[in-house]
Amino acid sequence: MGYPEFHRNLGPFSLRQIADHLDASLECDDENNLISDFNGIDRSKATDITFINDNFSNHINSLPVNTFLVSKDNKKISNTHKNILRVENLHISVAKLSNFFFEKHDSNFISSLNAPEVKNNYKYLDNSAIISNGVVIGKNARIESGVYIGHNCSIGENVVIENNTVITNSIIGDNVKIGRNCSIGQQGFGFALDIPTNKNIFHKGRAIIQNNVQIGSSCCIDRGSFKDTVIGENTYMDNMCHIAHNVVIGNNCVFAACLGVAGSATIGNYVFTGGQVGIAGHIKVGDRVKIAAQSGVFNDVENDQSLMGSPAINKFKYIKNFKKYYGRKIN
Image (cartoon, rainbow, N blue to C red; front, side, top):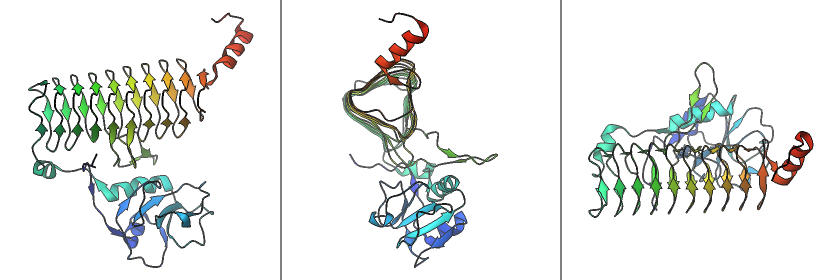
């Protein structure tokens, strides 16, 4: 798939312009060097700027990107041939820089896009549905009342989108069914704490829903911040699940109601969860993992594990401990 344009890049900016905007100290050979984009470290090109946390230990000279935003407290980054911008608060600076580089498209840009393309042999398109410019909807789609699809979204073939669902900044594959009152592709819960004026991080990523996915009613899937949020093929999601920004979910997963997955978690293939499961951010859950209802997963999980409890541990260990402390027989 191509990369439809969901935001405007205001760059390029010189290193001096960026340093002045962030009140950063600048270590470089040429402060007029132009920076074209702001990306996460895994997506950055030589002409981009990226950011690294204080616990970063790899040698940055081996990375293709040449410009780094780091905390002034980061002593591990020194004597490098890269461009370094040092700031007092890295998290706040990331938020400020994201809004320096990016902004939402305005109404004039959206008006300039092609009219929505809806294949003639669609099953059903309700008159109350709002389809924005630049949208492409594949054949045999069913779009029900109250649906809103934002500009430049791509909707595959044989897709069903039920009443009052809102889709923006998203690529939807073939044979996908989305239930009522869902919200897909909106800004995630990413911000820098700076009381009393917290700063939102501009989200430039997409929400990617791959083929044969089913999403229950009242689910929320956030777009990514600096990369995409991805739901893998043939994954089924019950009602009222929330998938946060940058989450990547594999193929053939099944999630019961009220699952919550925090930002930047990675979930493998054939993962099954019971209801009300919570998965922490920035962790990795392996393939073929089974997680019992109401469990809280806070650490990485290897392949083929069965977990229970909060914090979640091996299911058989949990049952043994439960019997020991409560004296109850569990089948």
